[in-house]
Every structure is written in structure tokens, then in C-alpha cells.
Length: 458
Image (cartoon, rainbow, N blue to C red; front, side, top):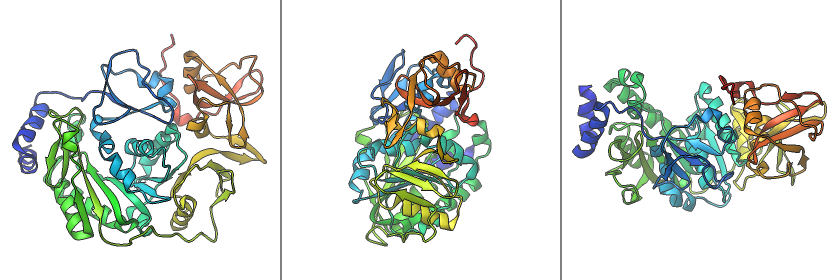
């Protein structure tokens, strides 16, 4: 790895390069486990062991040990997200994100899977509720994104599977774009031997070129004066500082100093960005930079309503009908043109819009069959099962029953449960639906979300 060390010393101050090389060389494999709470659903963590706050991120904590998250129903209900602390940097620039929103604004997470930064943005923007578009270009990475967005329970979100170039057609539409671009993955060296063996100068150069192409393609969609947040989980200047300089000088942007080093002891402030370095700051490492666009369209672009609209809003209800598959969505969004954006993108590719708000259910034979995602909608938590004009019964369940449900095991209905669809709750958090047939319950929990190898004594 001589090439890696040489490039690292070109990219970071000596003390930072030495700290990282020491960590990589001493056999340390993993950073501390950290979680970020979902402010839409909970206000404090619910673990029985010691924790300490992540200094740079509100609602985030380091855990003194790693629990079995799979066996915690609150995890499946979206009470928190397990995330490396370095990736929680958006909290450092929350004020700039909020200040960049225009009336009826829109925000894009361009390379969103598996959803850590998307859910973080949704938390930061929970009061403003702009349109938040979470896009993932790689098809096989979309399912974990849609699952994590559903668990978070927000309804001001559009999940898409398309290219940066397709989104770039929506001129000036976004106030903020977060681009955690695909990289050579040097930040994964402690976790993955494949990341080490697959690294080369050639792969770094290919990644740097791809990153410039992605940002160039999406650049027209950012309005003039809008904010670009550029990030990678790597350390070298080719993918980081050099690309930030390219964006500023070639695409037209002002690099913004955000004084983040004063908030994060050990954070390395570079000429064109900020670097989390293991050994100096807890976490696996992350680079980020913030730029203000000073070229292009001054105001948010308007999208012409589609003549053959796939998504149709029911006035005054917040409900959206997807004509393509009889799917009903709940959209709670103060952002501009979420429906028009989804329709416009669907005209480019009819399969690229995956969700629009929260998936409510499918209309079958004139009746609504509730969707598993609707059980995770944040507005349901703590309610009596009433959202808008939709009503259903709910039942609080214990840990054993919750794990049976998550494993798709048979659940015997309680005598007090009415017939029909019932929302099961665990500690007041919506977990999923069953259909009570009287002597048994049919589970609506998706097969791909079931948990496996549940201990028999729980």
C-alpha cells in the first residue's frame, strides 16, 4: 500500500496522515457503535446500558456496547438509525441548509442508499417539511433505501431510482443538493479486506472522474444561490479537494467555510473541505465540503403538469393516487411541486419513482388494503389509528408478540381485538398490520423484512 500512503501524505497534514496510518496498522477494526434517534417518533434513547452524546449531532449517541438490533422491535419501527458518527456531519451545517430553503423549497439527496443521510435530512427539515427527494441510481441499492425511508415515517419524501442526468433536466428545482458520491472507499479499510485489496491509483482516478461527471450532470437542477454539500468516505485529494475545486472553478460556485473544526475537536480543516480522520475523531472517517452555486438559473424551475399524470392528488386530503398500480399515498409536504416532479420524472422513465410520501395501501375490489409502510408513518405513533379520513383499530403488543410478528410467525388474536385490519404497536410505535380473521391473523409484514434466527426463549 505504498501508493496509498504516498497519496494520503499528499492529501492530509502529516499529523492526520500519521494518526490514520497508526489506526490502520494497529489492528483496530471497528469504530464505536453510534445511533441517531428519530425525532419524529422518540425523544430519548431506550437502552439499559451506558451511552454518551455525539458532540456534533443532536439526538445521536455512542453506545458502550453493541446490542442485537435485529431483536429490538423499536429498531424495526424506526425509533433510531444505526450510523457511523462521521456520517452525521449534516448537523454541523443544519443552519446553512435551513437558510438556503426558498419558500416551498426542495432538497435532493442524490446518492441516497441506504438512507442514513436522507433520514438525517428529514430530521433536520422536520418543521419546514420541504419536498425531499432521495435518489439512488443503482437499482439493487434501492430496496434498503425505501425500507429505511419507510421506517423513518416521514411523508414529505419522494424516493427515486434514476440518473443524475435525468434529475438535471429539472432546471433550478432544488435549493439544496447533498451528493455523497460513490468513491474508492478508503474509509472502509477497517471494515472490509475487499476495500483494501480493490484499491489502486487507477480506481481512485476512475472514481474522481465519475464524481465530476455526476456533479456536472445534476448541476443544472440546483438553483443559483443553492447549496451543494459534497461528501465521500475517502481521504485522497483527487476525489475530495480537487473535485471541490473543480466544482467551484469550472461549474461556478463559492466554497463556504463553516468553521466546523471549532465544533468537532480533531476535525481537519483543509483548503477545500473538512476531513474526519479515525484516530483524531471517533468514527470511520468522512470528507465533506459546502459550496454555494453562483451560476445558472436564479429561481426554482417550474415543472409543467403532466397531460397523462401518473400521480393524482385528492384535493384537501393529502392523499395521492398512483394510477399505474392503484396505490394510495399520503403526502404531507410544504415543498413545491412534489407531485409534478414525480409525474415529470415518470414521463422520462415510468418505473423510476418508487414512493411519493408514505405508502398507504392498495385499492382492491374497491377496498383499501393497508400497506406495511403505513404502519410506520410517524403520525400513527401514539394516535388512535386515525390519519386523515382513514380509520383502523390498533393494539399494543409485548416483546414476544412483536418478535413473532417480525418473524412472520402465527399470532393468535386477543379476544378484545375486532375483526379486520389491526395496527400492531410496540411501545406506542407503529410496527405493522395484521388482518384478524377471528381464529387467526394474516400478517401484512413484508417477507423481505422478516427477521430470521430468533432465539426460541424470547
